[in-house]
Length: 323
Length: 185
Image (cartoon, rainbow over all chains, first blue to last red; front, side, top):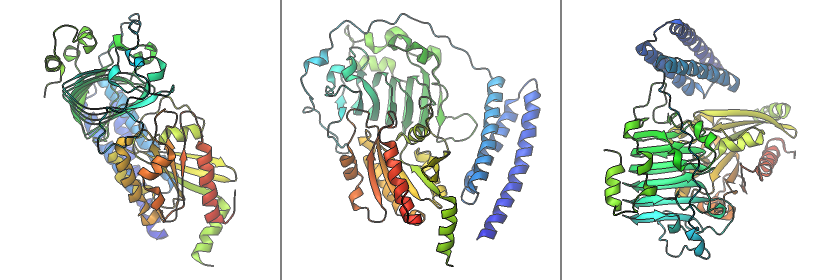
């Protein structure tokens, strides 16, 4: 077995080296070229991802040191390719307008009036292990705010589960409770034709089965699975992840909703999306930046909505992404 | 000299252990690893591929493999099974919606021949978040009590605060050391 492995390792070494020399020289050529043809870049991308796949397939027999070296090499190719891509098509820069942070509303926190955990009226989904989870679930055609949430009994930040929501506007930004009710992480499942307006949180957001929805959120990590037709307004310091998703559009979190920490907002990497269903250097067909003109203008955000005669349905009709 | 003796001798010389960090995405595998290594945990992106960290723990050298947990990557987990001494299964204790998935993936792993005998540590991570599930709740949800094939332990912890991470690693190293070398750390 040792012998077969050795010959496999040698064979891999030879073929990897050949590809490496080839790719490196092509990268150099295009690096010095004045105009970078996207066609050549695409071809390179295909070859680099082929190399990555070969490496992945070889992990079963390669010694770990070798694996690491190969991995580094492939990474460096991907990196230079990415840089070439950026220089070939400079991204349009956008600038943030610093607005004086509006004080987080002067209304007294309405959810403070509920004494103790108010979980009794929450129907729990069969699949959910209920216990003392904070959850917002099973709502249709409603306007939901922080006061619809059960109050967290603890002073620490807590995790929130949002599930089985249809035709709703969920606004957890206006009227935000101070401290005791802060949300640190969110789990979202099965949300259709809705607007979810969530605050910035220190933890992560993970979403499944979201359809035809507008979502605004600030979080540390963002993962979205099996979703389609979602406009995501995002502030994030790491790479957002999508997996098994289609028709997702990303843009920045509305500046006037950002409560604090505007520096974090400014360095947001909401367009560094990684599509795990499309692990290669070519651009993913499953997401794109939300064009400025299609984005919801700051003042039409639901925060100011429903004060007049607007009903949930007509607001949704106006805001939801086209299918 | 039997093969097992050779392996044992060889291992004794190296005193190396190979630990595999696995779990669903968003569990906090990379964050725990970085916390162990005293690295900055603020800018961690979800893992595409894997991370390897090697560091000394007592008399042992730990080779830790942290493999991405996104669904697309899970079929690749098996590429890393060979010679694994312990599986560190990381759970997001706030992720009630996916406990079923978590249980299925874990029990799938435990039935793998190549992981037979490996110690199993379950980190119930994110205890810093107020309403996370407790160790007992997670043991029940993941049906840990019915595991007979592996030595296991559940350790509630927080990668963000660093709480109890070392305790979990200590248990793992002890357990593996006992099995491989017949000695305690």
